[in-house]
Image (cartoon, rainbow, N blue to C red; front, side, top):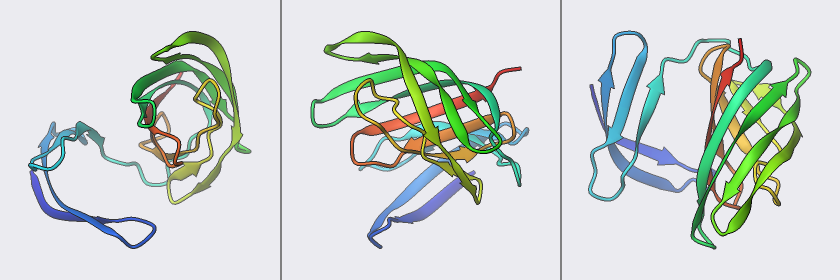
Amino acid sequence: MTVTGLVLTDADANNHGPFNLQFYLDGNGNAVSATMDVDDVTAGPSFQQTSGATIAGAYAAGAGGFEPVAGFGWSAVGPITVSSAGAVAGFTDFNYLTVADTANVPLTGTVASGSGTITGLGAVSATTPDTFNFYAIDNNRAFGIETDDTQLGLTYSQFQN
């Protein structure tokens, strides 16, 4: 399936694009997608979103990204718990190129749910609090994208059974 001419409008009403995406559907509500443009390189998994899905419980979370000022990548992985009241607690093992790996970096924060989005996961960085917007795929999985000005980051969380 091909989607052409997709235009994204940011919070400042700036239009970005158009983007042309190619989706390879698996027939089970999942797809792999890639942009087919000369100006960007983007690819990744896509999932059919379950209406009314919420995020609460114990999750294994993995995150990675790029810090543009220093020019280095980072990664983090660890368990997190999101309470039904919205409290986030947990830790990650954090790796930032040029900085010694840091184990057990605490994660704290609060979340507010609305329209399938959860905002406000605490520090993923070993030193700087970060803000992610989470999008529930279903009651077991969620994606997050960093929405602060610190760095670029994506995270994927899977419910621990």
